[in-house]
Length: 395
Image 1 (cartoon, helix red, strand yellow):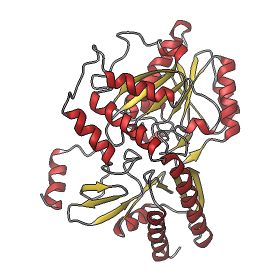
Image 2: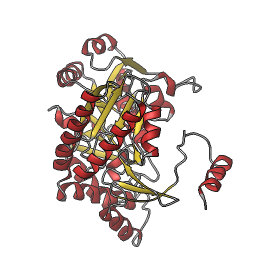
Image 3: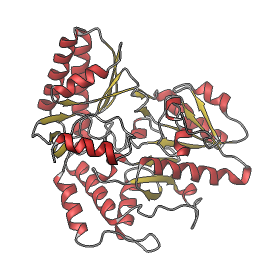
Image 4: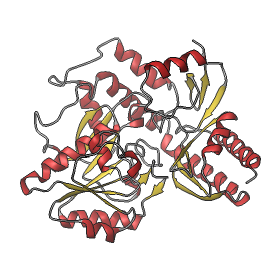
């Protein structure tokens, strides 16, 4: 099927819920992807970090192929050995607790919201404080939790029980706490919000405040988890532990899976019949996630993320010194943002035209998040394309 025919069929048969770039991808390997015409692209934004290990990673493909020959689905009213193994792996890499498996980040956040509300139900506590410019998903409750108005338009009335506070402002959170507050939820690096990074002092103060007030601290690691920031999970940069953590995106190495992780003393709050996910924690998904953990460990990808993240940050900072369009470079590891002084749509489009895939979020922030095994050579190529685009734009 050629490009025009496929796009026409999308328009006819697929709901228009995405702003789609007219690019038809059919193959990927590592940091590279190819379109239907055979053109190669350097992918520095692999599916909002879903393909965090790179495209078509052989370990993920092998795990998927091996498991598909055994059994695809085990209903959750039976036991599933792969769930047990993966839950243990997640806990061994994070904090002592238990795991609920689902299929996506929004589902993982839904689970966290339900657990928090059930936890507070005996004392009529249900409100969750979230941050301005946050993003937590596309379901009604996760849209309500999200601190950006544009995602809420047309969906009123949204579920009640969410209060928003400015990011990195502990005093603002103190003022928002009421007798109904049960939890505080945040991303330690706001992805859709523009790669805004939580200050260490703010996070530590927030942990102390939640402990003092008896509030649950929920950390949304859907985009920051699985080594993306130079630690297995971003909260580990801050020397604190959340009470609940949400995971998805790169957890499965490209295969759909999500998880809600809760400390042991809170994990049994959701008992039998209170929450479920039909396809959550399937043998296929868990096998891929186990292979992802093993690959990150054996290939020393967290080390590479730190090293290449520092290299990419340095190269971007050198560009900033040359081009006055760049306002700031920020982020951690291989989750970096370049804030511009003007909208970045044309920069994104010209990078695409020259064979580099990045993202533009919050109108003026270029989001750059290559796979964890990215090389210096690939970074140099991406930087050369970005610089050529800046030169063309005359900035």
